[in-house]
Length: 107
Length: 117
Image 1 (cartoon, rainbow over the protein chains, first blue to last red):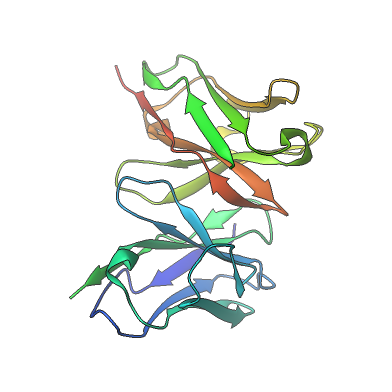
Image 2 (image 1 turned 90 degrees about the horizontal axis):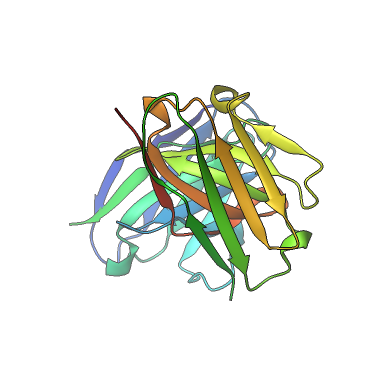
């Protein structure tokens, strides 16, 4: 199984900050990497698919990059509504696997 | 608008069975693969099973293989998850998801399954 490791597990930042969340796969996942946002008590929502493609309706302050085993989600200017847990997800091979999440908080 | 509405959850004893349903609307159900993803209380997300658009192919995580069965009724736009021999570690919120090219793009609100005596 491909292990997905996210860092940090908790990130505290100020409104307006540029924040970067990291995700590392245990082997090459060929850019088949998605990011999901889950707010408290809600279902996850797709933000980014295949490394750097913004899902329809998602604000442009969200962006993704990476290749091979290392991927990042960047929020260019943190907003209060971005408080959530963010999960990376690989769909390169079975079983499909998620990272354990980064909880993003506002300072 | 894509809508996925799960039902059928609740409290069940270890070793017993339960069947989840997911009613889909707002898109042509028969054109999309579908999947179940679960989340144990205060834990992360775990993919459970996927079924192809026509039901001809299914995929399972090892821990549920032989116990869970994913199926679909395209005439009713409904996805199912039959869960047998349930264990305490199956306790979770189960999300129905629509698949787009191998990954979930839309999620239902989830249904809670609690396995406990």
